[in-house]
Length: 164
Image 1 (tube, helix red, strand yellow):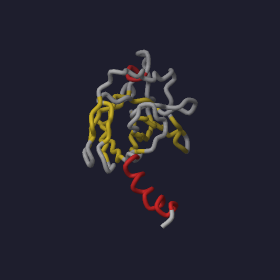
Image 2 (cartoon, helix red, strand yellow):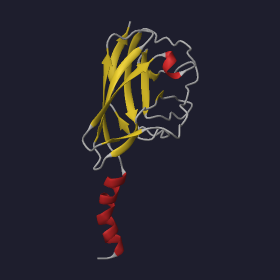
Image 3 (cartoon, one colour):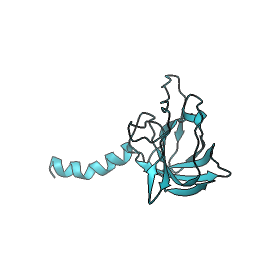
Image 4 (tube, one colour):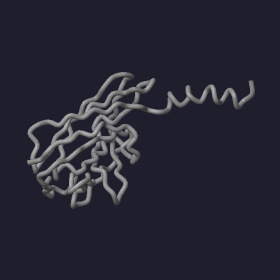
């Protein structure tokens, strides 16, 4: 057996130890309105090993113009006319600063973490109010182990809802 054959046999094993896979499920928490939307996020570790995650996870809205970096990247789209369009805050999103003293927890294989995300102006900006205009929306959440990752690799399904 040559070196390349051995590499092809070992590569899937090495990859399963270094890549983190998660299932992400979301559920809207009623009531939601033009001032706030809340949702419950359940992240399950599907990796072969325990994964270290921040105890206090960060969240941010996905934006067209800038990279969205956080543990939870929220994609919120609003139905306008005949298609969904990305809903973006009218104020700059605050990227959380990294604290060297952050606490971590280990998410064991096949175990879950549950977080409640509060989507309101004070969650992301300088306490400036945001208004979710009435209409049809859909939302999904991506989970990243690193709060500095902007690649939405672990996505929930889209969930539709109406703001009145």
